[in-house]
Amino acid sequence: MSKGHRRSRLSMRCLLAFAHVALVTGCGEPTRPPEALLARLAASPSTPTPVDLGTLGGNYSYAMGINNRGDVVGYSGLTSVGQQRAFLWKDGTLTDLGTLGGLESAALGINDRGRIVGYSQLSDGRHHGFLWEDGTMTDLETLGGVYSYAFGINNRGQVVGYSQLASGQTHAFLWDNGTMFDLGTLGGPESYAIGTNDLGQVVGYSQIPGGRYRAFLWEGGTSTNLGTLGLDSYALGINNRGQVAGYSQLADGRYRAFLWEHGTMTALGAPDGSFLSVAWGINNNGPVVGYSLSQFFGNGQYRALLWAGESMTELGTLGGSDAVAIGINARGQVVGYSKLANSQFWRATLWTK
Image (cartoon, rainbow, N blue to C red; front, top):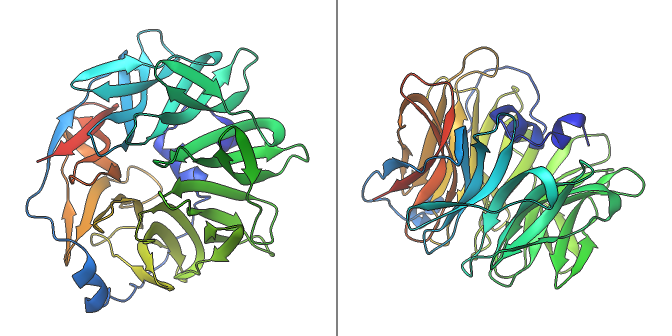
């Protein structure tokens, strides 16, 4: 795992680094999604309105997950410069979830019972994944190494993420009822689990022999390579129908969001001129959310996107130039972050109808 993964602050560059985005350019477009697949994606009747969820006193905040009750989790800067804390936004109120003894924490996922996962700094500066429930933050420990990060939790209470091994390698894990299980790899040294559903299926990405990365689906002890649209691929979300959202590098070097279903990976497209599009969240009805980036170098624009029915909709911002969508619940509420007008800082955002 690179040093960039160990940084506590999840900037946009860190989020992209989690999937090992290569700095390359190219041209050419993937094929249009087949009509049969598009017909199975639920249509969105209207574009949600963005709402600023505020901060814990600092200049920035990021929303990273939402459950079907509309509770939102993420992380925010504090009044004290240089610190960030995991938060729960519920009924209009932001709550600081605390830490495992260190200065910083971040919440990355929440289930319908209100159980929250993420990572926290320990008193010695290391990062460990946590499970938060009813005011108590529990250390999930590691697979034998220094760090762990928890990204997703299902309604069964199973947690997924990745951890360092005693050997120094990084492997995807499934934490269940107090035990952290190593999910292995697709043949390479590293793997990362990002999402899970209520069936216990897990998605993420793994190195394969030769160093490339491939999206995987883990189920019942077996990891399946989901393929690619050209070069590398990364799976980030899965719903209870087994549909997988993620993104893949094309043969020409650019990246495109995908939806994987029944063995087929289909490109979801991107706004004209985009270097990258990423599908991050998917609900059980099929709509997918994510974002695009116009260019990786320089001041590229981020656009929050919703793919539903035969449409790709830009979700809008809080008045600034950029927005990113990360999660969507069964009610069609979307979370992520956006810039305010005339501001360089991101703010946690809820798009709601």
